Structures are given as C-alpha cells and as structure tokens.
Image 1 (cartoon, helix red, strand yellow):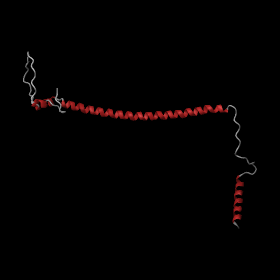
Image 2 (cartoon, rainbow, N blue to C red):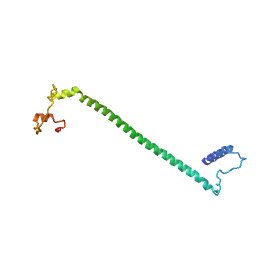
Image 3 (cartoon, rainbow, N blue to C red):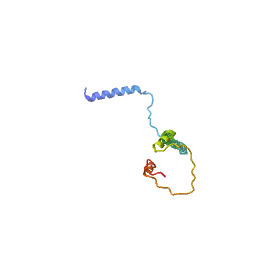
Image 4 (cartoon, helix red, strand yellow):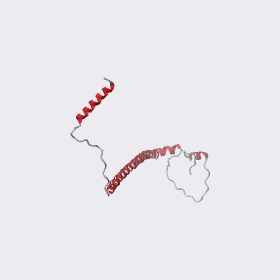
Length: 153
C-alpha cells in the first residue's frame, strides 16, 4: 500500500465516521443568515439604552471617586487624631511638671538656695521721699539672670 492509498483510506474512514453523526434525511442548512434590514425608528430605541449605560458608567465613576476622597479624608482624620493624642499626652506631662515646679516645698528650697530667709514679722514702711535706686551688686545681678542668660526686669 502506498502513502497516497493510505491517506485516501484514512479520508474515507473520517468521512464514514462523520456520516454517522449527520442524519442524511435532514436537509443541510447553512449557519450564516443575512441580517434583516433595519426597521424605521429602531435607532431611537437604542438611544435610551445608550443613555442608560452612559449614566451607569458615570455613576460608578462617581462612586469610586467618592470612595477615594473618603479614604483620603480617613487618613487625614487618623493623622489629626494621632496629633491630638500626642498633644494631650504632652499637655499632661507639662501639667505634671508645672505642679512639681510650683510646689511650696520646691519654692522654699529655691529661695533658701538664693540666700533668702523666712520673714519673722510684718513691718510697714512709710516713705515720704523718693530716691533713685542704687545699681545692683554683681552677686545680685547674677541671681537675677534666668536660664537664657537674659537679665529679668
């Protein structure tokens, strides 16, 4: 058997197998058909559908854009809340520091460190003549300087 005869017998076999799948009594029909001519006014039936699809797409775009803006605002709100918590914590620390620095025991200790002594009584001084104050001594000027190195008024 030659190669051509083998191919021919294979084609016959395939054709025989296909003939078993197709009923020979049914007429063969083509799957492709000619589209009908457009009806007058059918174009106007498509306009509301196109408008509806366009509006739906625009609404979806608007929803997505609103969602993005809300997410950005949420991040901004979180940042603001974090800064607020930090400020409240710092405020509490500063209040505790002020309470410690303004305690009477500390004020008395600072006054004693500056050479001040507690008062033994009260005296009233009546002045009739105004005089020009004398300049402060160097020791007194040093005690009047604050931490920034500027003299207090």
